[in-house]
Length: 201
Image (tube, rainbow, N blue to C red; front, side, top):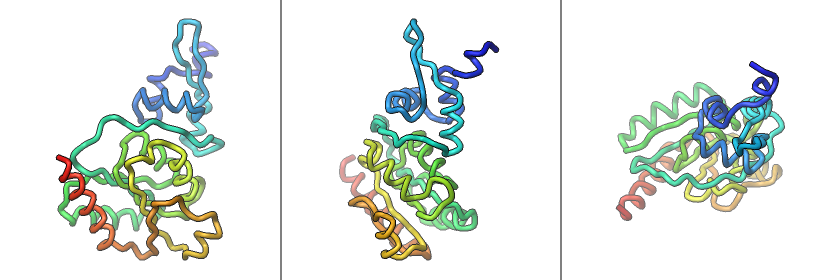
């Protein structure tokens, strides 16, 4: 492996490392989320260091990403929660709803951001208080991205409304619920989304 190969990788290699599509890496490179340059032949090379920083959640700019073209009939739900016990509870309860949904989970804000790029969820349910990239940063980064279009965001947090407001509040359209997790309300939201989707089929 020569020096350049050690420092840079191909778009395909970066996509494999991050677990996202080639197109997503291209968009992230264009938006500056990962450092990249093009060879004289027009081939994009990605900085391995910037890929590692993204995976670790260190020193990344807020991305502006494109809306994924492909959508699915089943509803995709992403739950971002750093409490592993609570995450298991989400899995158990959502599975008991017997609704046509696919559940995706993330334990950190950075993982949640990557999951949005990888899986294009229809609904994201997130905590706010998390180590590293917290829920506020995650939501704000998505608010500046076209990935936010068509994706519902629900916050379930132990913070009260005053604490949330003191930390800058949340973008318009983001629903806020206090913990404990209001599973009945969440099920109603999901059922409403499914009904709305069915009306367009």
